[in-house]
Length: 263
Length: 162
Image 1 (cartoon, each protein chain N blue to C red):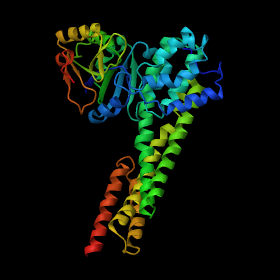
Image 2: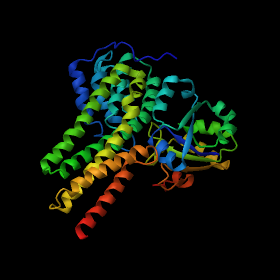
Image 3: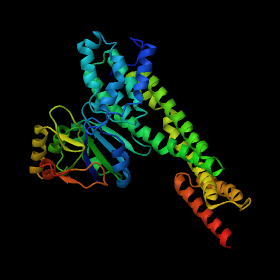
Image 4: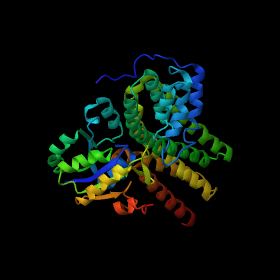
């Protein structure tokens, strides 16, 4: 079957239109509701591109396309940028309406599950643990919050920018971009990084909460716990999740701290 | 092992299916029944992206799914069968007598449909098809994920499901 909507772009988007679409992405969930979920948000984001359709904003194609893009849609809010780029491209390429609707439906699943695994289950915990580690190592409130916000939003913004560009570039062939190694292997690497950070952050944060005056004991404990955690994770790869190992290490640290205090 | 879940969900493969149902049922494969998707490589490519490693997905037309049903039902792993609309499931049910229960997992708003649950909107025609299936002995319930309680067809149609 011939797939249209992914060759040379017939109508280049002006910088103003691209910026307009990108800024609207931040409000993609502003009109979220149970009937259409993110549907109106998709229509809102795609709208600046639709003004380039023959007939302009007053033409029938603009109205038809905008109505289509405002129908039910659901995806991860950051990776929805892929859908916005790809759907704008298919509309401007003149892909038949029924095919665009099927394309929209098919995009919901992968953009939801890939985004959930990459962001909610990967990037968000990693950035939280990084901020916790900064706290444990003596960082003040401002530094802890700034660490989290800067790290998290660096990934968040990069994903939105990449998504919009990849969607526009590939159109209906966007599966090519989504099957890249970043999405295939990224969640697994983030899970390992999260386990390592948990092994560092939780003991040092606890040490700071429990109190000072224990010399180099906590630091040595952290180093041992990190080493044990890393080795265990590698040895048990595929049979144990990072958070379980982190919990085990945390329990061992609490036991160690209790014995040290009361022993 | 038999196919454990016959689900109607207009999103087809997504998180609620592969994680919500997939993990507690220990699902090994999904049979996606749709005449259009079964002949569309680009759509199959997209749906495969939503399936985690270790879970297989088979794309079938209604006729193919009915012909191969015994084989899928005899697999060693647990399976889920998905359609995106009620009509496709009805056509399958007329060919597959073992299909005795249907899960409404997600039918979202479109013109002519009325809200029955947060995730189920039905047109009068779709309501009638579901009643016909129930009168033939097929158990129809609505349940988006295993953690929520199933809503019977009577409760759903009488608006007592919320």
